[in-house]
Length: 413
Image (cartoon, rainbow, N blue to C red; front, side):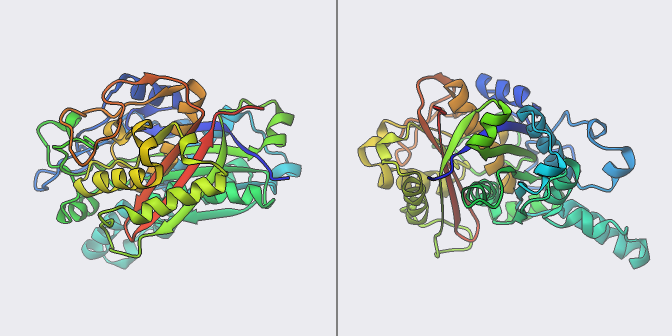
């Protein structure tokens, strides 16, 4: 009999607040986490806005010396994982340790650390480079530190698949439990690259919004006047486990994870095909994995980046997969409030999908003011919606044409 996998813990560090309750309340109220960049002097940049984490207190999770030697993306990832484990009530004993995995995703790793010490190298020479340079910057440091913090000795992986990384991490963790490699996994994504090189690089691609005088309205997925995404930072981790394990522990169950798809566009380094063909194949694969028909999905947490190409192509892909049912679906982009966390986005959005099913309330797409004829679905505009939701899908698509989709159901024992 196929093993069943459920979500039993959630941990969030986002621009809407550190902690699941703060973030969820921010989503439900339609609050924006976007503002002027404060991490560096952005006056020379075309885009001078971002969704920064504003209330994170490293001392809650780390000794001062340790925090100093961890890049922000690692700090956020560990904090979110600890919150998810605490939320689930999980205590990892020696007997359980090898049955607990950690699989995380990020897009760019410790780029701010690389920037910082490249400047040190040029100004002061190689002997002034910190011995913590490599451990601060490599992408698997969240998964490594999480395993050490929690004592998780099972499968340990880090995926770097651009903006699909967090979703791929959740999907791969789900598979590891299905295949029996572990019974429990901490999984999700983390990112923190609000730094001159990343902001300048994405702006050079014309990918970022330049609505600098009105940051709270800059991220506007599916709206006719969208002009690019808003860079964000943070982490989202969920704890998933085999159903019988969760029942034995008496754990709270947010949702059941039932499907996973992944695909490649095989088309372009940064742009999706106009018809969203690769994304459509990925959604279909997730539905096959879940053994579900398209008309069984009630809600999609869209990739919805607020870029002209993504939003129209994702809409086209949804129409391809769901046909007439596409117009009965609720589709929303939480990036309208959180900004785009790159490789961490799939982690927080997996958490949002589980919370949506648990609370039976759909987060809105804020800043949706002027409909785009190419984007004509129900995007849950501007106001959260309480409604019955049995099954939900979460989409993530990344540079290189990589796609990831997961499906969750409302848990029914």
